[in-house]
Structures are given as structure tokens and as C-alpha cells.
Length: 82
Image 1 (cartoon, rainbow, N blue to C red):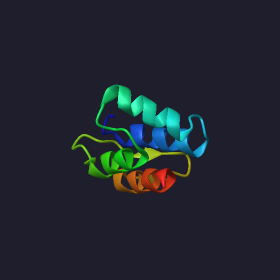
Image 2 (cartoon, one colour):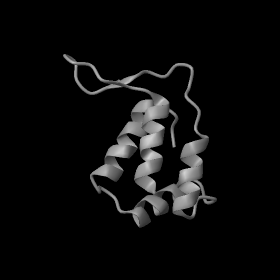
Image 3 (cartoon, one colour):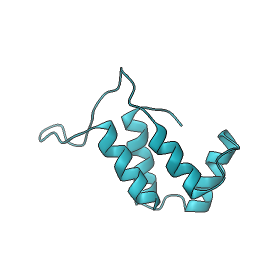
């Protein structure tokens, strides 16, 4: 539910690695916001997120940095939810 890139990245990892199935994800979102009841509601919620001014880049490797920006991670999450 937070707006940081690292939180979106963590959520994308949860989806990508099937840590939770879609029904579990919907259930958890619904516990925090009872207006989120479907996959489409989650997609719209993610799409509405805006990068915070104090956001930090997510990078995967200290030696060969691959910076991942907020919009890039957000797009990945939306694709994973389709």
C-alpha cells in the first residue's frame, strides 16, 4: 500500500515468485481497503500510484548497478497482475 519503489519491487517479487496467489493478494488488499475486491481494482490502484519526491532507486547489484525506477517497477507489477 506504500508508495516507495522498493515496496512495489517487493510486491512484484511476491507476484513473480508465486509467494501468494491472486486470491490471497486480493484478500490482503481488501483487509486494508475494502473497496479493493478484484484483480482489476488492484491494477487500478497500482496504476494510480505516484512516485514520492523522496523516493530512492532500487538497484539489484552493488557492483553492476541496474537502477529500476518507480514507473518501470509499476509497469512490471501491472503486467504481472494481468
